[in-house]
Image (cartoon, rainbow, N blue to C red; front, side):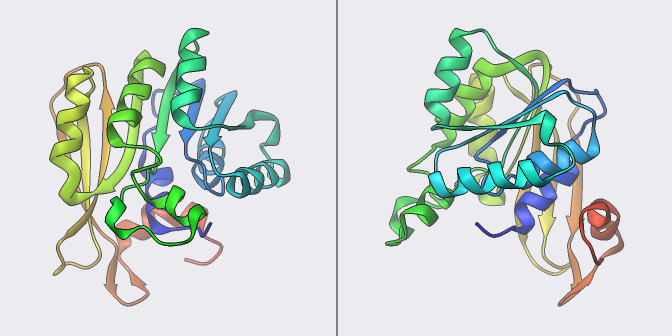
Length: 222
């Protein structure tokens, strides 16, 4: 699995200001977001769950080679099974993050691993939100990144589980382009919505000051 801009954005943007003690990364891929959060905060428990075997093995390897291996653990499971098991054990997390699959079935390819990583057939938004609703602590935060065009449907689904949108950042590739992604933060508390916009590039490979400020701690060269 490649390291994509979506994962970098989510790992850098999601708030750790409430000092979460336990974090869950749903669909870890390479382990990128969990590793970024280990770098950003002192949470003692940072769990990840990944259904694809090769991605799971990659996550474990990256966790073990990092400076934070003692705080990181990855489960090899579908999120649906993981959520059911953890909710039965009454396990909860203060921060849950997910860069979920979001392309629909009509775009599926012959590459099964790529399909699992990128298509909603492996984890629907409904299943994601239901699981989060079970595992998020009463004062916890849930952060995700989805296509901008899916934002309202996702927010509506979340509200059915009493997860309320507290903060949104709409992401554009350039100043003149359409919004491409929505970074969303939810909690069980209904608050006044904070709305932001982030533009990634001025021109090809020339990044805006806002993007550099958000992500500079995670790139070797920026």
